[in-house]
Image (cartoon, rainbow, N blue to C red):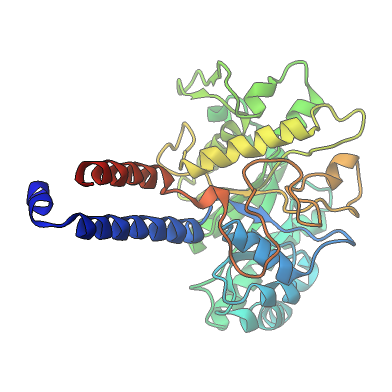
Length: 394
């Protein structure tokens, strides 16, 4: 029926009722969209601190932010229990390489620390070790792949291989060359470990995880590394002469360097994920660039790009997959001051800086988040239509 037919056959009161009904539908759509639209980035939930909130409070906080992917460094049963029924996707970890190389012990660990929580808690990946290949422990390097294989076999034996995959997180320092990205190459001394590891990833279909921190590059050479380039802010960019691709930020260049390094080893069939990246809000006097302003710029700009579904210049059709480091400041982490100041939140649940987390709440039930209202422009337009229709009819 055309609009003029409605106006000629309906009373003003019935038209008003119709408009109010339309307005109610728009408002309901706003609420549903805001409450259910997940953010597209994950977050690292480290716990090296003595003042962190209870996991049930953390569950409420992350639900209020619509964060639906979390990475742990262990398989804390209190955390996994607190998130039961939330649908939040978990990566859990185990760094006990020595025991995991034993097939029986690997199976016992999976049976005790992973299997009981599935399916109530959605565990999708187990990381074995953390930055093993960039360390100096050759025994650990030699144990890494056998441990991953044991965990994988345990998942197969327990009927979980279709739900949970296996990976390990590497420092970007396993690259010997990262610039230009097309020349990316792994360190020669690590090739004996990386080649069979890549074969494993390709065989089981698990991602290659990289911890990448442009902050470290800027901190080491603030005179030669462009701050806008590492903070995702406007800059001329850097052109790769081999591919003619232009990079406007360091993180994307590092990702593509990893893809190039894998291709040089015969693998173009493995996905790269960023398992850690972030920027500290505070540091020691000699930690150039560690500030609230830079941390807010790095994480805020990164999250905008992730929300837009951006890919890297080499793989524009593959959205960048990132786990931000970290959820909370961790007051017991050793090392320079920056190590204790990567958190997006203080332990009391207040944001360290403003990047749109105004809806954060420790309430155990989900609440609306500023990031979640993806339908707001459409709803605003429809609201305008309602007002114009009201003026026309009444």
